[in-house]
Image (cartoon, rainbow, N blue to C red):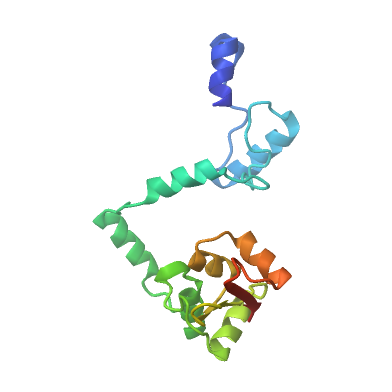
Length: 183
């Protein structure tokens, strides 16, 4: 949009498009990065061609739009077949399958709201060492649920991750009902 607005404001005659260099396909990003650093163009969104999203975050509005666009998306039989063919012959270890299973989040996760065995928790910690397991205790119902991350505990209660973190650190119950403890 920045370029579109500039074209409308300054006119097409004040811009030019030219090929700076021809190169092999596998060198395009490296050469683009070279020219980004050399010329420092005003209308380039990314400052680094090799890591275009480095330091950038999508807005909440953009994330919501992307989510809405992906809902209900179906892939053609041809695409499904290509994806299937690409996976054939690959052998996944039992550890990898367990990690992939634990990596699922939300209600689709078979571990959702269940207590993890020590072996499962150890496996998860090996694959993601900075993950913090959370135990949520409901004071009213005396229900205790175990979650593999702060994010999962937050989704379970329908609240923000920062809320779980805040009450976890303070030791106070959320809404005088839910206690959070680290696993």
